[in-house]
Image 1 (spheres, helix red, strand yellow):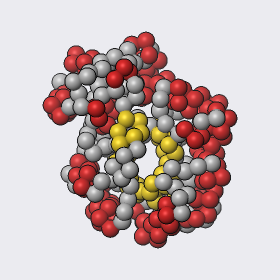
Image 2 (cartoon, rainbow, N blue to C red):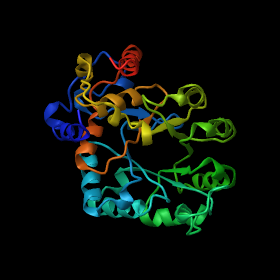
Image 3 (cartoon, rainbow, N blue to C red):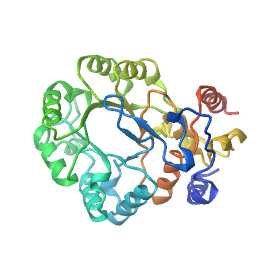
Length: 322
């Protein structure tokens, strides 16, 4: 199957059974009766959010009308979780404008990120430094995000190198009630030892880490500690990324017949249901800069989620290239 065919298969999503496969036999956390959106609780408060959100690092270079259409459709399908960052170009601006025009800002769960001013230590000279070159970080970055987005539910410290300098600020903002949740992001496994240290040191509500069927590094220590510390986990890059993009590896393989029992009609849904069925994972944030991709991804948040036995089958099927 080519990438074009995968994309085309997404377009028939709703016709192929968006709401199928509901099972009353599953625990409440793993089912959505009558086709409703599957949600999980944020451990620190019990507030429930949809298991499928959206990552928006491409929204800064996506035409505004497309961004607006994607967010409108997401809301119609019951999605609320939007993840962005101060460093994602024009993403915050586009998101804030679209949500205000649609009149749904207060109904969405908006996460953004800040970092300390300047490029990371040891960051090489060259064009890439322009990403950090405006010098905006810390409180100034947060105030700018608030102006753009109009509210922030979850504020992450972006990058491990910013944690110690920025954590006092984000803790203060939570105490003041300007944000409801705080967290840390790290999508590089070599940084996980420091992330573990910070998870033990700070009263975090969320951590955001890489987790996918192709990258299960976080299962060893990050996810168990999150459960122990009652922290929500937002899974970044749940479809893989870079050279490990899972959809690029599908080729002409067919979904296993038993995937239909979970209401799965595409490989994206297969990969996403695997991620959000992990007991430690609260939600996943696949990117979507096309409406058809958004609809396909959102379908993974309906129907059934795999239990432990089915998760093992998914691992074996994918890993064995059966």
